[in-house]
Each structure stands twice: as structure tokens, then as C-alpha cells.
Amino acid sequence: MPAGLFLVLHIVGWSLYNRPLIQEAGTSLKIGIIQGNIPNAIKFDSNGWRRALEGYTAGYKELADRKVDAVLIPETALPFIWTNEYQRSTLSFYQAILERGVVAWVGGFGQEENGLTNSLLAIDRTGAIVGRYDKLKLVPLGEYIPFYEILGGIINRLSPLDARLVPGNSKQLFDTPFGRAIVGICYDSAFAENFRYQAAQGGEFMITASNNAHYKPPMLAQHHALDVMRAIETDRWAAIATNTGYSAFVNPHGETIWKSRLNTYEVRDATIYRRKTRTLYVRWGDWLTPLLLVLAGLMRLIVRN
Image (cartoon, rainbow, N blue to C red; front, side, top):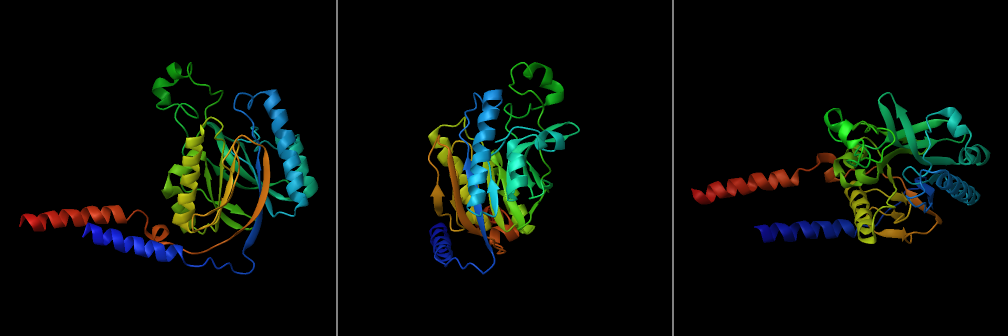
């Protein structure tokens, strides 16, 4: 039975993989990605801010000249509080949005009453924030302090945090001028349920933003593989922006159309497509493992009797 189930499921998967990707007219989006390549050592000082602003502003203008529909930049690529209108209005990247009029999905910080959020913000051609996704799965010690009320005073001395980050709402959605997107920020990519929920709520394409500057190449490849799996599970095209690699475009079959080099500054664009399909995983979630456990239990009872 296990061998038969294994064979049947792989045949089904193979048949799904070999279905042609039919792209309907009017569903295309030309997305630009900027991989800034800002080392973590300088990311939060004046030198890093200046380098980031120069690189992302130049890349945005280049992509705008290529007539992209939107520009995606990585997690905390521009580490400023973007929900503060005055602060963002002083930035050259923001001024470029007002000049060129191309939608930008910006990795930065947002504000909440009890702290800051690691956010991806959708900025329209008028400079208004029209969408916002706050990172859901924060990294322990790197982005938040576990059991803060009890251990905060001790761990604060060890943590590099200057301010406390708070997680986003698990039911948040990200609307864009092109329709609803499925969004993840870095560590979120390891949690499939977050992407499944957004797809079930009408997400038509996938965008992820990550820093990744602190990882070695094997970890970067693993992180890319997580994003590939999320694209397959939701049957969505994906645009992936990272700080130091791997940035990429992935189709719903899990094929990487383009992948960046590591530790390089790169500006790239590609066409992805919006989709409204609903896979079995999107419809029902993680049903297979519980079902197999129940069947295994029943088989054991049958054998005993």
C-alpha cells in the first residue's frame, strides 16, 4: 500500500507538472527587482543608508525607463520608518517614485503603538501607501526577544536590537493596483500556511522580500528552495527580491526563470502572470498527513483483529 500510494501520487504530480502554463490575455505584469548588496555591517549606519539610497534610486529609475509595472526591493532595503510621511518624503527613492510614477514595493519599517514592524509597503504613483504587509514570523533574538516581559531586561544586553519589533497579523492581506498579492518577508517563507491563506483569499501572484546577507551560500539556496515550494503549492508566479542573493523569478511549476548571482548589485525585470487557480493544498490545507495517520491507525487495528 505505501508503495502503491507513493507511485500514484508521483504520477499525479508528474501529470500536473506537465500541464502547459496557459497565460490569459491581460494577466501579465512586468516586475522589476533590485538586489542592493548592502552588507549587514554597514546596513544601519550613515554609509550604508547613503549607499542604499543611491543604489535603489538608480535601479528604480533604470527599471522605470524599461516600462515595468512595479519595482520590488528587499526586506528593510531602505531601513527608514516609511509610515512617517515626513521621513519618507525626504528620501531620494521616494522622490523618484513621484517623478517616474511607477509603483514600488518597499522593504522598510512601519510603526505600531508597541514597537516597529518589519514591513513591505506598496507605494503608488502619487506617493501614498496603498498596501502594507508586516512580517509575521520574526526571528528570535535577531528581531524580537522571546518572553520579553520576563527575560527582556537580561537579553536586552545581548541583543543587537535598538527597538522592539512586533509581528504582523496572521490574517493580513496585501492589495496592489494590479490585484491582491501573496506576500512573505524572509523567515515567513518557511511557513506554508501563511501563503496558503493569502492564496485562498484571492492572492493572484507572489512576492517575497528578504535580507539574507548574514547567510552562507547553502542557506541561501535553501531559502530559495522554500520560495520555490510556496510557488508550487499555491500555483503562482513569484518575484523574489533579496539583498545579497538569491533574487529570482519562479513560475508555478517551480522552475526558476532567472536567479541572481551572490553578493552583487543587480537590476532585473521579467514578466509574470496573475492566476486565480486553487490547488488542493490551497482549498484544504495540510489534510494529507492527518489522513495518512488516521489510515495507518485503522490499518493497525485491522491487523491486530
